[in-house]
Amino acid sequence: MRRILAILMVIMSTSLILAGCGTKIDAEGDGVFKVGMEAGYAPFNWTQNDDSNGAVKIEGTEEYAAGYDVEVAKKIAEGLGEDLVIVKVEWDGLVPALKSGTIDAIIAGMSPTEKRKESIDFTDNYYMSDLVMVVAKGGEYENATSLADFSGAKVTAQLNTFHYDVIDQIEGVEKQTAMDNFSAIRVALESGVIDAYVTERPEAVSASAANDKFTFVELTDGFETSPDDTAIAVGIRKGNEELIGRINEILGDLPVEEQQSIMDQAILNQPSQN
Image (cartoon, rainbow, N blue to C red; front, side, top):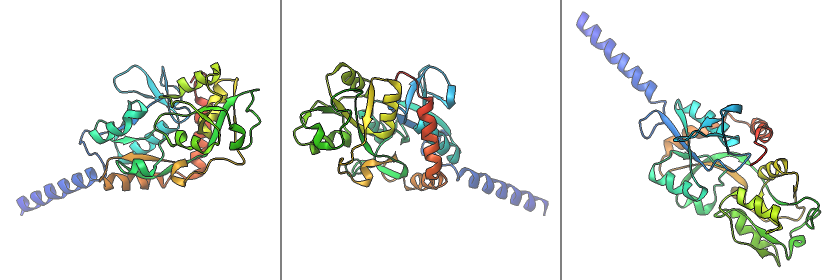
């Protein structure tokens, strides 16, 4: 009888351990949740030299990542019961890194567009934004109110984003070559190489806060976009429904008011030069 009771206790203990492990979503079995971001798209994500304001060290470097996406990634990792690892990846390399298994998720201010859904899956949204135009303060386009006001303007946006595609909606625009990152775009605007660039409102607030030569205009007659274009969601490898479901549960506990509060704090925390 003692042996039977001992065996039953072992079985019950093992079952509890397995059940506890089952609450973790860890495809690689390594106890970490690897998140890819470019760490150059403030206030969604940026790179800094220390761990201030909740920054997380970037894998393989002495640098740290911070911003709205990092705060969301921390909440998701905690909910999954995994350790967060931030992997710095160029924007154009994020989807390939996800598909190859280098990272477990993309949390990088990425919109769940139909084109992207062909190669990766997405969770529910964790932010909704809108498009604006960043221009030179005191310049020709500072008082623009409609797309028509940018006829003849030299306009660009980041490479491989729908921001670049919508420029075609401006009749008579001088569409410039897309650029890899926002640092290059901001330099182009300040130097007069371009007259404006298309971006999401949080990035525009970030740009104007970081450089007093910039401002942004919110158009009363603006771009036609779909809800997926202006939404922000977590990118996940195709077929990982369990992970998507678990992340959606976590995001369900992040109300819009808290999202905006986190974004407002990220804008305040961003480095002055970004």
